[in-house]
Image 1 (cartoon, rainbow, N blue to C red):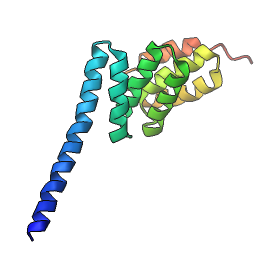
Image 2: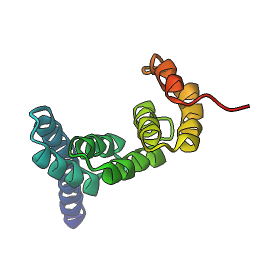
Image 3: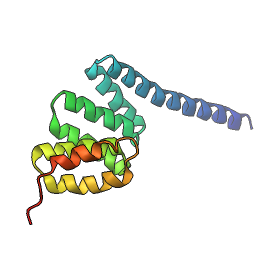
Image 4: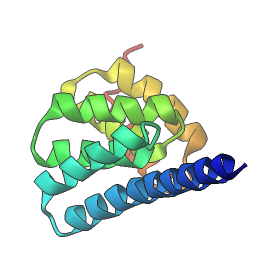
Length: 139
C-alpha cells in the first residue's frame, strides 16, 4: 500500500513537472519572439513542439520566424503543419495564399482561398485584397 502511494506521488510530480515544462517553453519562446530574439525564440518553440507536437501556435510562430529569415521553404513547411493540425486556421491560410500568389501558383491560392472565405472571422477584411491579387479569368 505504501508503494502505491509512493508511485502515485512520484507519477503526479512527473506529470506536473512535464506540464510546467511545456508551458514554460512556449512562454519563453513568446518572450524571445516579442523581444525580436528570433534565434532563441525558434529554439524554444522547437523545444515546445517536442513536448507538445500538436501546438499549432508554435508552428505558426516558427513560420513567422522563417518569413523574417526569408526562408520560404521552411515557412511553407511550418504553415503546412499548422494547416494539418487545424485546416481552418485563417492566419495560416491567409499567409499560404499570399505565398502562393507571390510564387504565381494561382490554382493553389484559389483552392486555399475557397476555404479561407468560408472560415474567416478575424481576417475577413482581407478577402477583397486577396481577390484583387488574382489575375482576371480568361473566358
